[in-house]
Length: 206
Image (tube, rainbow, N blue to C red; front, side):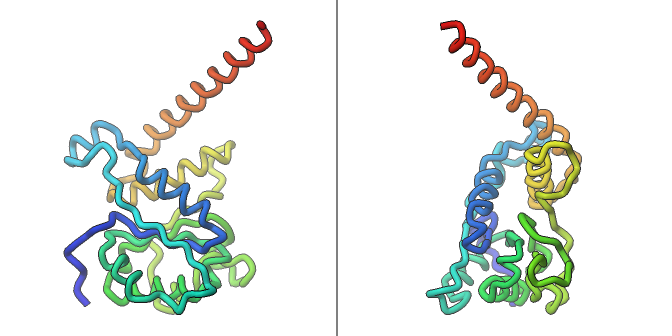
């Protein structure tokens, strides 16, 4: 099948219902991300280039499968983001969604966002990739893990994962925006910390 030319959504995020909080965090971070000035001016992007994201949370009960309406959403999405965890790895509906996107020739636009579990662990209780990925021979070229220990602070590791995914969606090198994002995240943290200290000082001064 030929790739759809009409794109309604920038990305389709699919997660298991137990991972819905991560799906919501991800959508908020993607849609709210402001790229560095030099990048968006150079590429002619909007300040917030990633928008119109569709979030689908899988409930295995009461759903007959990845039905026609959802297929339409996938067809009209530029990217497909799979929220990976041991929950989604066991999901039949997730397998159907991945299989369908693969069947329309869009495997290169699948992104894997790991929130829990271990990739390729060969253990059903810890494996985070749905077996259909290996079954279909899908090459995992875009994959980030929020639990990867790069920095001392877990919140900074999560932000790094978001930036890596953003870079993959935009088709740019992660380092081009990672350092900028790190500085901005630290600045926000310092502002919040200073404000918190100011409130404490004001309370004790009363």
